[in-house]
Amino acid sequence: MNLKTILRSLPALSIAITGISLVFSLSSCEPPDELSTDVNVYTEEIVFTSGESAIMTGRVLAQGAVQVTDHGFHIDTTDAFLNPIVISLGERNIPGRFVGEVHQLNIRNNYYCRAFLVENGETKTGNVLSFSTVSPQVLDFSPKEGISGTPITIEGVNLTADTKILWNDLVLTPQEVIAEALLPFNAPALADDPTITIRVVAQGDTLTLPEPFEYIIGTWTQLAELDDNERNQRHIYFEDGDNFVYGLGIGMGHMTNALHSMSKSTYQRSTYFLPSSPTEGAFFSNGYFGGGSLQKVTSPVLQLDVSKEFWHFSNGNFTKLADVPVELYKAAAIENNGKVYVYGGERPDRSRNQLIWVYDEGSDSWDFLNPAPFSPLGSLPHFRIGNYHYFITEDGQTWRHDPTADSWQRLADYPGQIDEYGVALVLDGNAYVGMQGASRKLYVYRPGSDTWRTKAGFLEMNPFYTIGGWAADGHVYVIRMQSVGDTNRLLWQLDPEAF
Image (cartoon, rainbow, N blue to C red):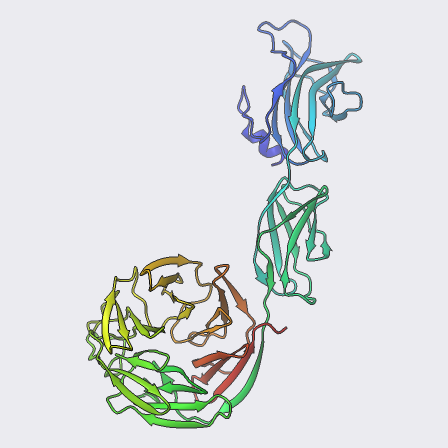
């Protein structure tokens, strides 16, 4: 708070105390009811205190014009005022209120204040008020991540002019200290640690921010250009041992019942055909898949012909299981401990479904849970970490379902742009989510801290979209296909901790 702000907030006859320390009068000196021809001075109030600053008001008391050669305030650490800080406001020729401001005080210290004026060479002093300065605090900073040179601002209160920033062990000087509350600076170049503990030192006090800053890291490597001339859309994908399986949906603009099983080491591919009608928009998880539209879906289609079949694929073999109790298009599925949970999706009339159906592998039967608080979609990110199921909604909300307790909790919002058919892959207890549509952005969700962070991207010369991916051995793998022209299909590998 500066002097102009305080002056604008002062009423005509009295002033509110906006400081955060207790102010009390050591000696009583109320303005007299009837003013004499003498000129007197009165210490009114301590209006504001911070870590190193204070603002106070006084009043010159007289019946008419005055000839004051100086007026202001004395500030000292004792009420004897043996070595005071003098706030000199200069000459004055009318009575009334005046305001003073002092800086460079010590934090957490007791001070005494009195108004003064000089008339005809004589110094007159007013009553004495006491006040205390307070401790600096740090509250937050933003952004929480970035690259070298990213502008960062630390937010706090009562920050002092000598404030420094510790960036791990590197000492930084802020560009300025704004209103004792903001410390702008730029992130230095990444050295040997991408996770930065930020501390602030103000008049010897060391204050630590609760969250670290994180450099955006990760290294992408193009591993292979895969041999495939089929452009897949609204398809399914999952892992099958050492193979990555993808297919069904729409291939080259037409419905297809082909599933391609590709070796994750040699990239050799075998093709298998579902012994049933092709579907698109089916739900899928860990070899299980079902539902989906039996017709190619375009936006104007208001009624769908939806399959209720439910299948499992492993080692080139299809096993037909008990039909899904309802017809669902673009439902979300998560396999967990011998059960397959099927969430949401669309009904044949394109209305949204919030029911949750549960398939039991042991009994080959279906049951249901209470409805979800929203309608999950299988085309939007969803994943499992431990026993919890996570979902991203169309407006970026993140929800967690505990299927054992059948309870829901909303978590930190997803930071990326919402689109369909990206990846949501779990590696070492964290989820790597993104690359929906043509986006090349990937984010990591850490359930322990309920935070999303950005991973480094990569360059693609032409528009690509995501076919699918997997995570293993400390790396994330993503298959991307060129969206127009040639059907180039590229396999990318991310080392999420490299820089």
